[in-house]
Length: 188
Image (cartoon, rainbow, N blue to C red; front, side, top):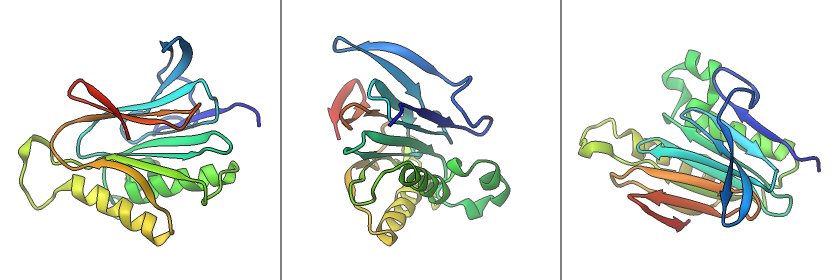
């Protein structure tokens, strides 16, 4: 399979002007692809690392097929597209229900198998100790859980809730997913 990488955002349908940097990590040169809020990235280049920063109430979802080293990462802001159909039409990646569905469909069109998908989730927190009925973080995670359950998909790892921001990274060479929070990093 030919190496590829896609980054989808509100403004563009390719990685043209988005943040892609070359970094050195443990002696290897890698392409660092930054996934901002309401964006999705997909890659099968083993040298890529997909990363999203500052997951608070937002939900970050990584999906990886280890057999073909194809994966994606999305950073969703809100749970349901029905809250703002016009915004959802302009950018489905803003919402958990439409963005995650689109990412999985795209990966499967590119050769991923639903039986091999490794799904990991982070974020969905309650930031700044806000205690209110809106609890967007919990609703984001609940929406993802329902989506996966309905489609007979399993979450292999998660770090959700709480009140600390998280950085989520997907290493395309191995499918390893890491969480960095408050200066500490661990594998998810």
